Length: 355
Image (cartoon, rainbow, N blue to C red; front, side):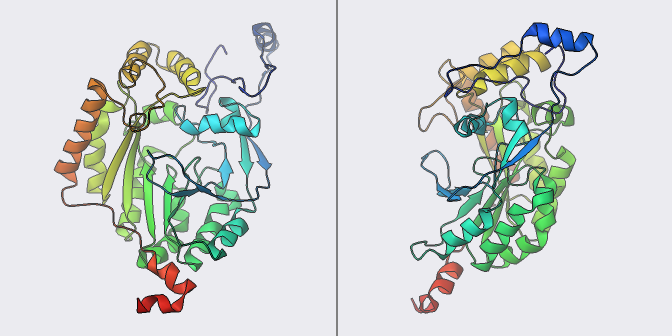
């Protein structure tokens, strides 16, 4: 495209690796549209209802600190250009680029499927994390309230719950979260990758502003809801210099913990990110790509267990050292509490309290 696509992270469509045929828009067609004063692409978001048979997923990766995840939506309108979940959109028959941001699959039956899981005699009240793949508070949630209904079911059964989000819309559900906090069955992870709004706009175009995300940390903390801030991902030469300022800021707002990942550009994300960085930050593109590769044995992608999330090498160590220093300096003697499973077990079997 001759100019960046406004409001989107990815700047191109990508081929679905499971499809034999490719769909490509020819430059001649784009030039003709421009000469006629027309748009070759409406850039509108589509919401498509799907009907899954299950909702709670067991997480197999040893690198991720969660046992079960749940995602009310597939695809994410937030449009974070680095998002590892983009590749999963190919399993639904779409592309990892613009399709991921513009074709959002909606699971309206998620709350009922969730309750079926919670009522299953074999379910033992393990923590379920919402947004293990895509954000449960992306823009369409304001209208559909699928996540809110799921939280009501989680609270009804007193099941431990985790949330990962970068949207201030979570504050809409403060009433439920406060009740859950009284039973110590809720923890929230807020993703903050930068304190610079200019960086946020191009990196995560349809997410909540930095100001609103910081407000979210403060409001949740003030109401007794434990908050961990995820500096995820750290992108060398782009936001890596902000680690200490971010930790200092969120600690002052009441966050109890911080965590990080180092960006890795697996699958189609490598071409999406490289296309994006050359179009939006051309003066720093080579440096950013080179330092990402420095963290992953000379490649943009890294699939090694134990290495792919944190990276290795000099640059990755500098990032890890900054995180360690920030915790010691600003979060000394703080930490996220463990979630309580006993309330769920007691509801399941009233005699549990006797043990």
